[in-house]
Amino acid sequence: MNAKNFIIIGGGIAGLSAIKAIREENKTDSVLWVSDEDRMPYKRTKINKHIASGFSKDEFALTDHHWLMENHIELLFDTAETINTQKHELTFKHRGTLKYNKLIIATGKTPRLLNISGLPQEKIHQVHTARQVENIVRSAVKAKKYLVIGAGVEGVETVDQLVKLGKEVTLVERNNMVLKRFFTPKFAHLMEQSIKKAGVHLLLGIKDITYCETESGASLITIDGQEYKIDTIISSIGYLPNTKLAMDSDIKCNGGILVNEYLETSSPDVYAAGDADEHPLGQITGLWHAAEHQGHLAGLNACGKQLKLELKPFRMKTEVFGDYYFSVLPSSNSLTFIEEEKGNLVRDMYFKDDKIEALLMKNDGDRAKVYQQALMEKWSLAKIRKEIPL
Ligand SMILES: Cc1cc2nc3c(=O)[nH]c(=O)nc-3n(C[C@H](O)[C@H](O)[C@H](O)COP(=O)(O)OP(=O)(O)OC[C@H]3O[C@@H](n4cnc5c(N)ncnc54)[C@H](O)[C@@H]3O)c2cc1C
Image (cartoon, rainbow, N blue to C red; front, side, top):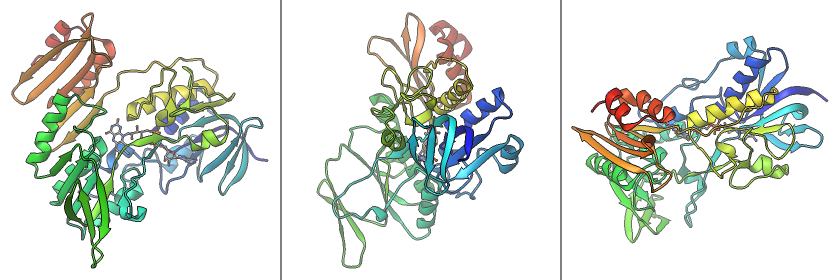
């Protein structure tokens, strides 16, 4: 049976970072990188922000064949189906079984499935993979009326693109605010005003959606008793860590794949990194830079280092409807709150013992890197006012 020193499952940023870290430490051992998508691993964050322009197949590729060859990385397009952790064996859908010395699981998240009675799954679009977004781009040739379900960041960014294409969009959300995962009610309200100003029909706190087809085959959606004729439905109702492979293989999982502070799973020589993970205090990250950081650490530790993961305050940023937003939410109610505004710039800062812990900002994107640095280094209010004056 064929054997590999390192196998990395998942062609996302966590997987690529792990590979780069392995090659920093070890130039020669065999490395196999597995992706179950239909193209070179790519920058996932770009896809839903380019619905209006469209994109070519490898436009957002994270790497190319030349780099892989130069670094002796084998990229396999296949699905890892089972892990025998006792025997250190991995079975693929097509390639058969391979042995590994060290395994890194970086399988990311999987979108929650929208379940509306009578609405067939093939009528529901998603924005998780490049292939899915290409389907939305194709739908835009004919479709005029869109329903986007879920006003999280991916949903709102998708709506922004549809508005750029001149589409008529209804955006519905069961919470009473947009971006509940990243925003305070104040910032949600700021964004909601821009969404409505852009002509989007925004419905918050919705309770009930039903579906039926008209005689002509058109989709008729009823939202809390009000009927809407819709051409295209897009679901963006959140994600769950992709734990299936780990769970089927007796690797311990809770909400995500359970890892310790060294990103080791419950099975020897098996690490996990990125959106698929659940960290010792129950955190599941779900941001690009967090996945990149974890992948790097998992790669180094798989090479024999013993580096502890420190969860850093990575920001969420998004640019929609002409505004820039940045958010690291406060994790406690007992922080000192300072709010500042000048022109269209708004910033809310949260301090503990005069060290910044959290920050929400609107329309100061040119200095976003300095804000991120302030959070990483826990600057005082005086230092922030000196280095990033209003
Ligand atoms: C549309 C969209 C926009 C986003 N925008 C932002 C943003 O602006 N900023 C930000 O910080 N974050 C953003 N995110 C989140 C960010 O993309 C993720 O946090 C990041 O991609 C996680 O990386 P990952 O490598 O852990 O997982 P993923 O990128 O999900 O990669 C995991 C890969 O593993 C593959 N896989 C799963 N199971 C198997 C298997 N059994 N065998 C083989 N392959 C498998 C999956 O198909 C996938 O290709 C966005 C996400 C989406 C969907």
